[in-house]
Image (tube, rainbow, N blue to C red; front, side, top):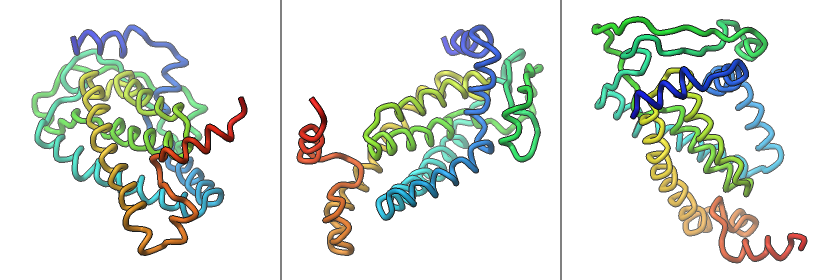
Length: 228
């Protein structure tokens, strides 16, 4: 099943438009300056609550990487598709710096050769990209009250299979893992905000009674203020 889904998503259901969109989505180096700009805008518009959101995202990504992803990668030592299968289609951005300029260059398409038994860098499970995209998707869906952000981890999971970096089972498992890990972190942050921050910065809690998870009263207020 894993090999069949990989063939469909990586080799059969392809298009030049998807090569560009999913290849760019999968390249973290491309997004670094955009992340930086987004962080500045979040701080400018939302102030302290925006800063708290950014700090939480940074800590959650740190937990994902050091506490979940890297230990599991070392423990499972699962080969990526292009390491274990011949003919896996790989999609990369052109080797241009700064990376944002590579968005206007042709995408680099290649195919994996015969597996190398001496390749010890096997790090297919879990997908760090998918775990971290789940963090951003959940946090921003709650912060901005928009379910559209939940598409981010789904698109990232698709892109990692499409570009030949992960097996379908890698990204599906990473989505589930990301929901549990990040859901727990969000719950813990909300508990701290409502139960402990009031002792340190009561003026913050008075202004923003909730951090991310909406309360029943805030939902009633939002529904009452929305046009019929």
